[in-house]
Image (cartoon, rainbow over all chains, first blue to last red; front, side):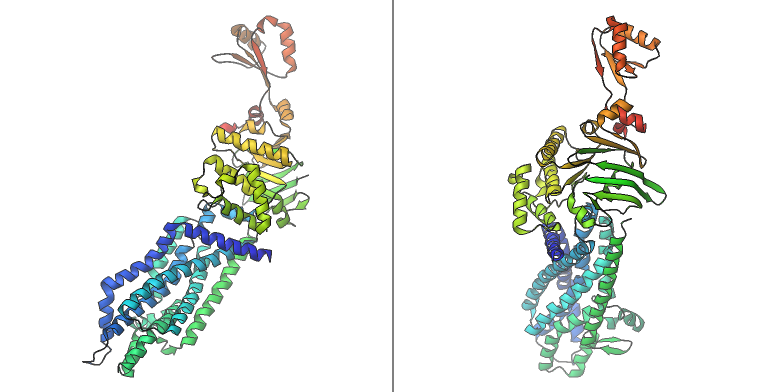
Length: 302
Length: 302
């Protein structure tokens, strides 16, 4: 019971330390917001043209639906990528504590090392969630402006998807950054993840655009399914709207396949339920790895 | 005994950091632990406080073995690190609250303890200020407050005044004196300043991981340090006389200094050559001389 209260206190302390560092919060927010601005400025028309390719010739459709579905595709990309990249960037408090020896202060206190480590993980989860919700709010204001066709139930599911993605991202960050002891190392890891992750999880480019071999390989990575679930909940409302506007089912299937709502790995379609199962399974594996690292590190007092 | 260490051993790969060291610290004592960097002081402190595991020997704090009861031992010790390990962006109140929570001190219990600490260290006026906005002396007071927040029986001060200006050093020492007089606290001090070690009740000197000397400052000075006579007049006569007898004589701008073998020699020479002694002073060797004698190293140079 006492250890639980200590954990809550550590989470509060870590979260407070993070949000008092305005620069760290700004840096975490800026990457996804820059992506949103870049899209609106440079890529919006390219995506809209891509959607038009799947409509029957001469077919006209409500412009708000097309603008909205392109925006929804981008929002799903930004949120799924951010769940990992923000988690990596927000873990600064763990690294700062190593650098400024606060970790030693915890070691001389009667608190378990596992409680301290769990405190970092939970606070990073909260911080990433708060940043993601801020980004989501900005994105939803944009979608409401250009065309909003997302049912309320799907908005709820998008938040659930974000939570799954954040769980995956914070666990991955916890495992990787357990081995980082310097600010430079932290920046290097965060930069590497920020620049690579969007591509290897199929967020910036749909898997359908890659070669079969590469697409199948990327299908083995759990991050791909984090993108898949969130895409479905962002875009399905727009697909339904397009169906009511008279777009043939075959064309809609083409859109779903090309824009990764329907994911195919080794030629087989992965259902939404299977996507959740793979993502949560990966979280379980990462959790086991994180716990193992924490236990080994706490036993090893040189 | 507050600390009882027997045959302590610790190695880092091939380097023997602490080699068969034994010593005891009595209740209410000011205990000084001296040694150059790398002598084994910090390693010993880290073992006492449970940060490092020992390779051999036994370490008991307040009767509890650190290996069997680490949590109990940690709750008996408060440590002031050489550099502050508190959260610079958080307020003094937040820092003390979150650290107190690690010792299972919450709610009303914390408020009562905070009140006591504020009174003892005069913190009330700076309680709501962020740590980074405090002066060096104020920060040091907060470090001491953090170490005392759980009412420990042993206060470990790891070079608490290194890098501080003279005024702040005096402030820190006034606080330590007050804590010893009013609370009967046992203080374990490591320092580079020999004048600080000179006021200790007991001193242990480490060199290369070995205990090379121990005793009260008076005992150590008698055993290891020479006494001196300083001649301010009749300098030439004094120099000739003592040089002729084979004593080490050192002449500087204002005086001629003769290193004696024992204090008793002063009386002998005073009887033999009373005319030399018209303007002179006799000085006992200090802790600098002791340290130089037993380690062959001058703390001012390391």
